[in-house]
Length: 307
Image 1: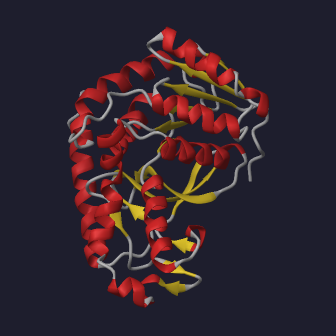
Image 2: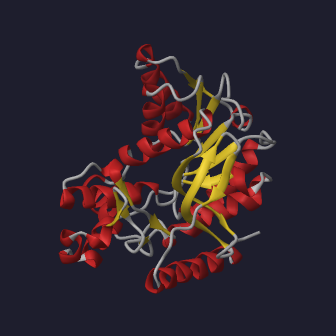
Image 3: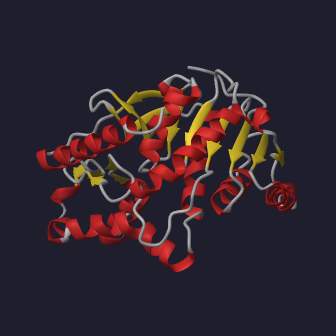
């Protein structure tokens, strides 16, 4: 087991609502020793840093503006930079706009630290994770996306509200794609060792409607306030802690999956060295078919991007 990274440094590329929320969440939890922030708009970046520095008195973490080259040498590099998803726009429609942004960002970070963990937050996250694995020069296990982590949290909260149990006691995952094609794995979900489908309340639930509600929650937030930020910020802070503390927690993230020959989101054991193993939950035929459909779409998108 690798030791904790002492004096760890995180770089956040993109100082918009998502990037600044991630910085704030990581600052409040003292996830790393130092946070570097970079953005194509230097005035906004400086303003966010000055604002965050005012909150740093409750944390042991320092915050400053970082150059692209400095950010490329951080232990954890979080890429939030990308075109904002428009109301009514699917995540897949974002791919062409965000591809050029990702390429420009990664070019600016070079040479990237060989032991860095690269985390993609921009959408469509599976496709951009695939692109980043090819463009960054890092091994695949060091390039991850936030994937269906937040979706899985939303799924567990929905079950919690139905069964009146803590969401931390709900062992259930959303897998595959983050967004319209995501798959709720009901068949192997459990609570306290009891299969979720054995609960009478779950049997009576309209599970397809609940899964759709989880999948579309982000769109509801975007329609109301223009963007999602706080939930994904909490996710990134927890993922970063898994890395800096070598927790080896099992969390659903985008990574290359040999089984499907595509970047998809599945539970992985995550630590200082990145992804240690992928844990594929048991799935019924319908769930597996839906994941395979996502894999085909992701492979198609990745093969068609500009090389």
